[in-house]
Length: 202
Image (cartoon, rainbow, N blue to C red):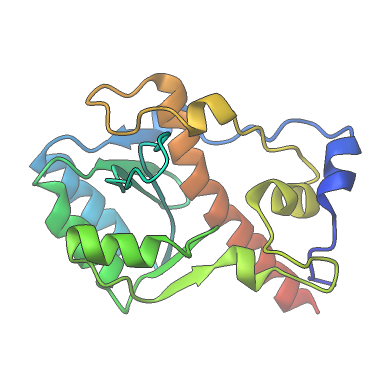
């Protein structure tokens, strides 16, 4: 049974151990061309990677978002965070996100395709939105990462609303921001692997 049927209410009531997530030692903020090149080599050696993006929130009615400000890509072992404001990062992001050879998996990617194209000229290709893919008869909406982590790992994914709505355009991201962003991409890849194992065992 691979359909994710755990509800948000069940998740809130469950006493689950905390999902540990990726550690800071396995997260790289890509802030120069050399790191961008290292990241590209790692992605090109992987068949599938985790993907997400973050944008500085808008608070005023009618205010247009200027995001994405950060793009996160993860292999099984490592997560790389790409500030979009750094010109050296854009060719790498374009190469990876447009590649038909590298599968990108993530949650809630509905808006990413349009903003990446309009803001950065990147045509997102070969992507799976896990929120849509995992939706079973027990869900009317898409499945989020919290529900998927509880379903597949029996753990609770902690996502701080304060960090999630922080300033992702800042030139200096905090450790909490780095971990939040890295785990968004990395956990998607882990969930995808867990889903594949489920499919293979059926």
